[in-house]
Image (cartoon, rainbow, N blue to C red; front, side):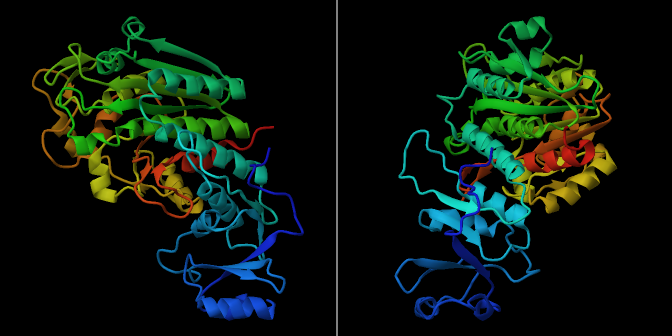
Length: 463
């Protein structure tokens, strides 16, 4: 079903004229004298992101002018039209001429219109768009809806989104798509050999769990998605300072991205056997909290010395990845809000990914540009593996120094994946610190559209 903000062809839709500074005169050709005079009176110069509402002779809205970057401009924002739903009055609109990238423009409109309104209702201002010719409205709507689901999960505070509610989100997704799901909860994690997930989550009054969803033909190529679902991260006994703890409701952003990706895959009916694994915990402080210096056993059998309890995400991922690897799938992909070092290296908008598979890495780099879901490959620099050495265990889970924190975290995770044909790890931020077109301030789903494009390219549409 098309998105509620997409409209069927409507002869009364207000045309949006996309213009550049150099092409502003041509862009206003055919407007009424009233509209042209109003644009001149407003001093409209078609700077990127600027808009002008043009009244017609009777006072009704005749057209909208919207400024774009010049073609090929360095640093041009390909989601720029995602600003329009935030500045236009309610109504139905269409582009007077098809944008250069009509699919991206339509998606940007839907993503830009997203609002998180669970706790504060604001007056509705629906701005509906007639999609340009040739746009797959169903596909674009599915992607936008899955992204909104992920954003909602990240934006929900931890008092209303704990491990149980993360499990509930996966179960709702399973019900929507006819998937099977089970969860291993609390002390059953020890009985089922997920000791590190249990250790990280045992200090909370809200039981830790591993949620396991399966969907698709069992004979199809196997793809497993793993998400870090830390509902809130205090840092554990290595308690975070208040400034670092303020946004820790988003520490389940990896799980949100994984859930959104699974929604896209199942909604499209891709020809693959999907498995979604979400390790959901709260890293709390109590007498049963795990400690710096503890040695934990892992599902894989490796012993892990704890260097810092605030690096808990890689521990729960390690057990989940070990389970994922046991099936020897074609691809294992994980999403995690894992390190501040990744933000230092690339900032909040550009998440790094790590993979030793050259074909996979090349496809991801190419598709990141194609679908405007940016990501950047970082090296699994094997000489840094020695920074994870421990004197009393098989390895430490953090490096022995201040450098290459994102790389060493990725190297730690690779120790738990051996049988999968290809593995990629995304170290995401899952948050927009400030609003941008198509990307409202708050929770963000990074990497999911990119991996979906890869899976769609490799495994095709379903019947």
